[in-house]
Image (cartoon, rainbow over all chains, first blue to last red; front, side, top):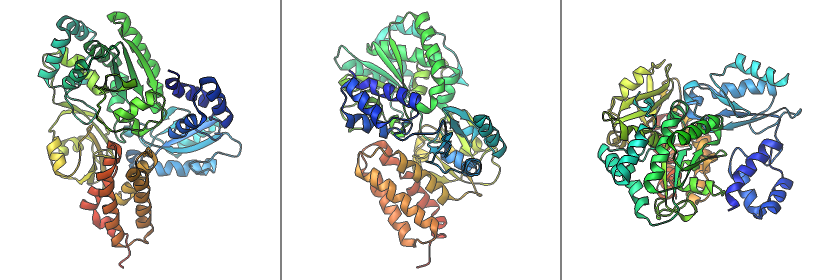
Amino acid sequence: MVQDLLLPILKHEQKKSGYISEAAIKRISIQTGIPVSRIFGVATFYSMFHTKPQGKNMIEVCHGPSCHLNGSFNVLKSLYKSLKIKPGETTKDKKFSLHTCSCIGCCDKGPAMLLNGKQYTLLDETKLKAIIKKCRS
Amino acid sequence: MQILRKTELKAYKKAKKIGQKGVIEILSKKGLVGRGGAAFPTARKWQFAIDTKSDTKYVICNADEGEPGTFKDHLVLEKVPENVIEGIIIAAETIAAKQAYIYLRGEYEYLKPKIQKAISSVLKRSGSKVKIDIVVGAGAYVCGDETAIIKSIEGYRGQAYLKPPFPPVEGLWGKPTVINNVGTLANVPQAILFDDWDPHLRLFSLSGDVTKPGIYEFPMGVSLKKLIELGKPKNPVKAVYFGCFGGCMPYKEILLTPENVCGQNCVIGAGTIIVVDNTHSIVDMAETIAKFYAFESCGKCTPCREGSKRCLDLIAKIQSGKATKQDCDTLLDLALHIHETSLCGLGQTATNHLITALKYFREEFEQKCKLH
């Protein structure tokens, strides 16, 4: 059973390279014998896999209803102010990618986001500025 | 909180003593039902897997808590992971499975070391031979559906498929598989061990426009008003959403039982309560939730894949002020069609929020429409 290793393999590739390139898909296909089409299908199905290059720091702002009520829109606005990118975009210096994501289970501490997989909660403009500054240094 | 009482493997020892029949009998007598939202009797699910003849069987712990506004499993995995693991080995040994998986959602990956530690410790102390592996998801709401979890663990796109056969008969790699929610498995050792275990207690995830959000443990049938007052809302409360899939209702006093909530055309599901006060628009909520479903639809069946996008388009049109009241009718019609014709639970419930919002808060939609 090789197929069940596909998710961990793709996770590893995503972590190592920041995205899953066409070359990586072809390489994995040769190594595992799983058709390219199927690997591509899996890589594009899950939202945490990216098939385009991403910035060094991955920001995913929770867009669930609880975070919406607690001001996730303001989080996106603040991030736009400091990074000049909208959801789905990467900064020119390739340091940050911004995405919105579905609920991350921090509904009692919204608005929340994931930065490189780590939770940041009860966000406001001051907190966000400090977080971005720390990433830049 | 009852759910946080530790069982320290005493339930596992008791389960070994009373055997397969004893475990099924005790869970059935105590009335343990699934905590994922469907409330299926746990003992019956296990019995199906026992009755299916096979050398290989599996147990899957569903830790893909993706329902927006729900964070109860998060609490359980963080505070009492040992209870969950004890529940898993009891389940596995009862149905004679040698392998179990914990399907942990990608967004909770940071909990993995803690769970891994609990697995090693429980297996070492209990001497159980059950192999438990953690499979980390990669971001897909639909993988909360049991058939989608199976596909995802097998390494495919996490798309749901038609039942029957149900997983306890034919599941992971075609073998009998019991899939239980984190909350259910955490309750298994407690139900077996404690005489005073209360089957009616549930975890309610309270969030939204409240100043004291969090997990509250109450019996099924608790007063909605009491629960919301504990959350100390800032402003007068307008509406309550039962997660995204459960729909919404105007705020009023009801006792939270599945029947009462169903009477409001909503679904109580996993006890998710999102409070919306009078400073927020229901149309904005509808747009947020419609975006979520358009993004999370797995794409397998047409009503959900295409319909969720059309719903979002129509709501955007209403938001832009270019829509007419007829567009509200079209939206409702579309919502009802998606509800009735989608393949899996995601699609069938994807428009509950629209059907109920248009029933109870139609004037908010119409206020944004043109007169003609």
